Length: 130
Image (cartoon, rainbow, N blue to C red; front, side, top):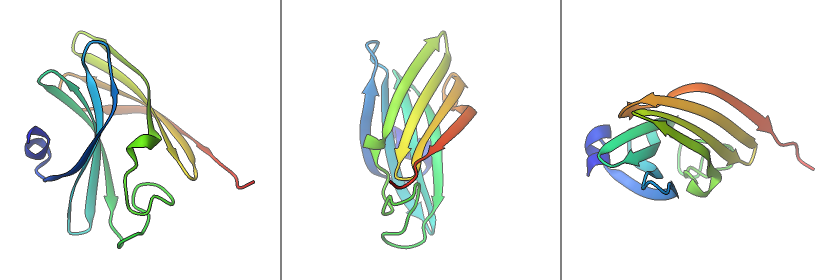
């Protein structure tokens, strides 16, 4: 319910992808579309605090690519790997490796307290067909 309230959309699916020894949980959430506007978010839940990375996308029709090439219009939580999550005080540093058919996207994000992560850097590696 908190995710729905904070994003103003019903949740379609929620998939945990990591948990720290301190109990911080990381998940991928897919929200319902608004017309052709799709939204998925990665959320770091630390007690009552939640920090998001939003992945908006334009829905082009059933089965069409949405977030990544060949995704069939679905977000795939198993393609996300948490490289690291560091926390000092209320500051978070999060590195994510997001794999797709076309390659990997490695990104580093920072946040001060709850709300939204800021992307510091992203680098992509493309795969060539063999």
